[in-house]
Image (cartoon, rainbow, N blue to C red; front, side, top):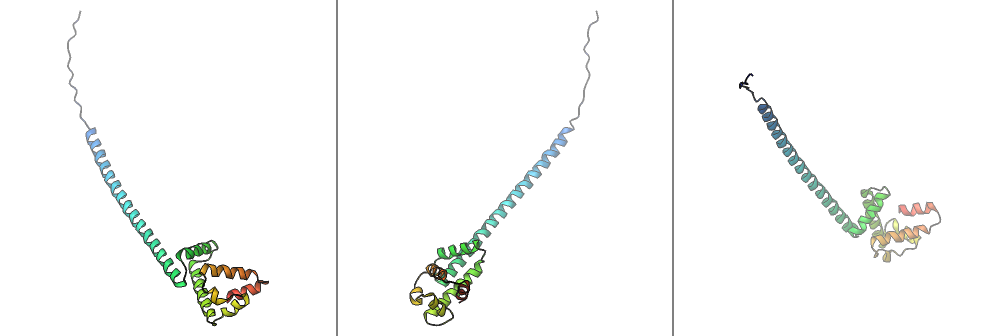
Length: 161
């Protein structure tokens, strides 16, 4: 019988994956760093956008307050009128200018001046008492009185005054 003898075969291997995995790990580290930088940039942009929105809202609120003071009404009433105007497709600037003209013409009529005094007379409105009402009640009173007019042409003519 033949006896088995031990044979030794030396095997040599070279680890070529270590360099490749090291390169991938290094690349992922750079990607992670860039993602972190990108996240920080987006966070900065988000904060800047938030500040811009808050600043814009503060300017809008300030303008609302100044206009309400100018025409002698509350910010709540003016805000409600602006909202209603926007639903009707009327620009805020147009509404504000119309309200300023309305207040001025009402004031002129109260001292027997201006174009509106005849319109108030036709509508049967005592301007002295009318002028003491809050702006939103004045507008409601005018709307009610305009509804009593028989012809559309009279409504347009008086509304223009």
